[in-house]
Image 1 (tube, rainbow, N blue to C red):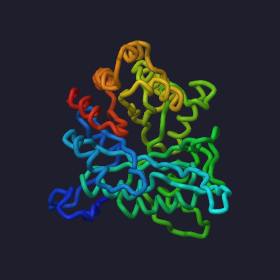
Image 2 (cartoon, rainbow, N blue to C red):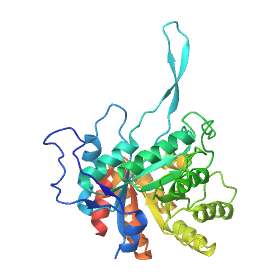
Image 3 (cartoon, rainbow, N blue to C red):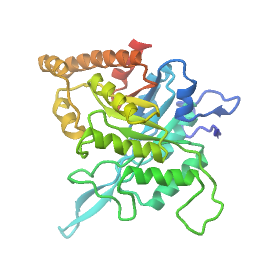
Length: 344
C-alpha cells in the first residue's frame, strides 16, 4: 500500500488549499476500491489542460464533483502531433508538438490536493519503451499505483496508427512492460535486483467492438489475452445503448474473463456530436436518442435530452450491478454532476 506525502503543489497561497492533514492518506488500487465497496462506485475522467494553462483549471473542473466522493480520477495522456511551421525563408518545417502534457504531474497534484486516487493513462503512440519505463519509475516514486494502458489513436491528419520506432505497437506489449516491472524486470538486461513495482493495471474494452477488429469474437479474444497477461480490470469505451454493454459483459464472462468491467459514460451535449462521435469513436447513437435530439432547436435543448439519457443509463447500469460508473467529463462537469446527483 502506498502513502503519499501531502504538499501544496498549486503554488498559490490561499487558493485551492488542501484540507489540513493529520495523517497519511491510505491510497488504494482500483481493484481494492471495488472489493471494499458496498454499492456502485463513482469515478471521473479528465483531460490535462492545454500547454500554458494552470493546474487551477483542473481544480475548477473537479471541485463541483468532489461532493460525490469519487473513488478515483483518470487523467488521459495525449501523444504529440506533427505540424508544419513556416520558416523565415518561406519553407515549411515539420515540428512535433505535445499540446496536453503533464499527466503524471496532474495525477500527483490531484492525489495531493483531494486525497483521492488518480489513474494516469499510458499510451503506446509517441513514446519509446525507455520513456515509458521512466514514466513508470516516476509514478512508482510518487506512490501512484494505478495505470490504464492503451494503444492510443493515430495522430490527427493521419489515417493509421504508427508506433514510435522504439515503442510498442499494441496495448498488450505496453501491458507486458508494466507487468515485467511489477516483477522487477527492467529494460537493461544487466540491471539486477530491480525494485518490483506494484501497479494495478486497467485496459480498454469495446462494447461495440474495436473498429480495427474483424468481429466481436476476435476482439474479446484479444481482451482475454490482456487479462491472462496481467490486466486487473477493464474500462469500456463510451456507449449510449446499455444493451450493447450487457451483451459485451455476458460474452466476456462466457469466454472466461472474470475481472471487473467498468462502463464508460459520456453525455451528449450538442447536435454535432451526432456525427462526430460515430465517426471518431465508432459508437452508435440509439434511434430513440437521435430522434429526440433531431427535435431540439438549440444545443441547450440537446444538453437537457443528453442529461436525461445519461441519468437513465446510469440508473439501469447501477441496477445491473456494475462495480463503478465511470464518467468522461471532458469539459462538461455540470452535466455529469446533474446525472450523478440524480442517482445518489
